[in-house]
Length: 97
Length: 97
Image 1 (cartoon, rainbow over the protein chains, first blue to last red):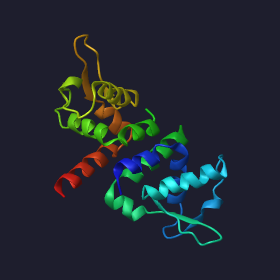
Image 2: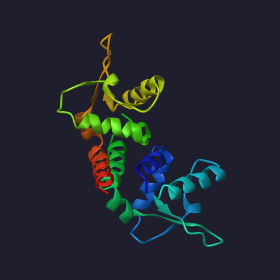
Image 3: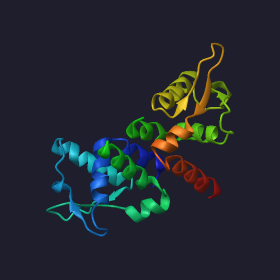
């Protein structure tokens, strides 16, 4: 994992919102990429999940008929302690204002 | 300050290294932009300091004959608690390996 790639991936508000939704799930649970209601085209969604995967932020195993997605929460906490909390605090701050 | 702009600014390793050098200075002290030995052209340096300033990460007052620069450490800690520590930990991790 490279901090530059991770920061670059998280610079986008839509990508941050996907990561935050994933962080809200119980650990170990997986969503499908298709389950997100994202206000962008299918190809932009594919790109979004690719950027997150390539930055090392998510796993998104391809099951053939669907693609799962989870945040690599433990890896991220270990490698960049506090980074996910920055996202959470910012979400809480903006949603309460 | 916008987290996206800040993350985007910090995605670049050279910009992170400038921020870390500034964080190492005693609070309240200022460096000049010209005092950094950066391996890029003058215009790239001007751009680098502009990106940091526009993201709200630094102040760089123009004194006419020189430009100072400081990190807005307190503002950043208040708005994005833990973010600067992520940069510091990453620097410590990579410099000790």
